Image (cartoon, rainbow, N blue to C red; front, side):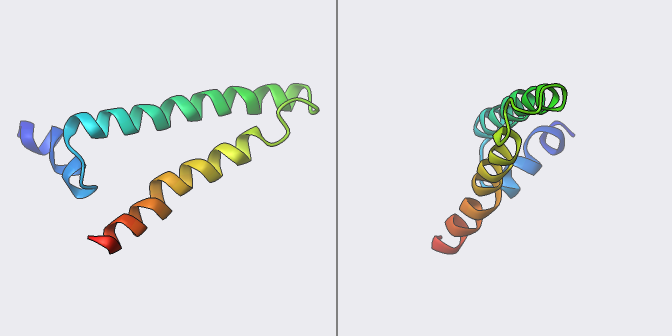
Length: 74
């Protein structure tokens, strides 16, 4: 049961538990910061005009594009 909870998903993305914790945490922190920037942009539109969309592009690159490229090399 513990293996299923902690190890099955990280293995599907070719990561150890600790690697997955680090990657997922960095994604979460980036989304939190970008989310606050978007909220401030909503209040004062001249602030953070590209922060949210830039964060989404970077995260997509890290999560999807790089992972697909890495899996085709292996």
